[in-house]
Length: 291
Image (tube, rainbow, N blue to C red; front, side, top):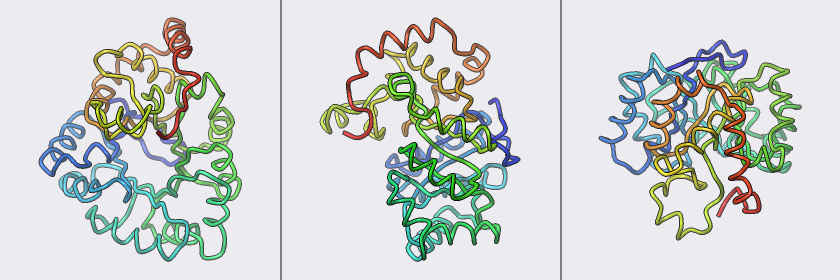
């Protein structure tokens, strides 16, 4: 597994991240097998959140043999300090650790989120304190709103940002361009989610009937759309992201992990761009986020 610098954090992380949803709902034995497979292939960055069902419990148990040799990132979706502090204590306990390598303010989607988080008694107070104490060695944000992410970065020099730098939204709408520029200028670590996503699910029925019900949006199929999937991943890396977080199923995680070296040794080119551009015509008018 190729490893790359995560911005100016000083971390050298695998170019493919293990997203905790992979461990969700599949049982402890499956989570143990997935995590061992990942570590065996050089994956050294694991990301999870309290909102991911039973993922903290399952992944926490799976990582006990490896904790000292991997980076562990967690999140809080709370906007107020008191609730976030209680949630963080639970996360530390369930993940069998006394610190997080990265702790992230999760799911920033509006200016109201930013105002509450940075206001009196907001979660930002906790994040600053925990970083000073070493409980959160680095702190970051995750967001689906570029405007909200940029507003948060104007208020604090975060170490990392996790954002959907997605081929569809970037090519059709330019989503992420400003955030990429700002993060690169400041040396902020760039983590990319949804690189392998094609579009939103049409509805819950489509999602439930698919092979990938744990994915928030519809990913390219690993078998029938492997060329498009590869091109989409290449596109994300071509933007300059440090690592990608595949959708929350083992098929997509293993696809990325097994092909990472080949993908990075054959960068995004005109053939890849033409392939994605042609497919964009079929999906560009569909919504991207949510169902």
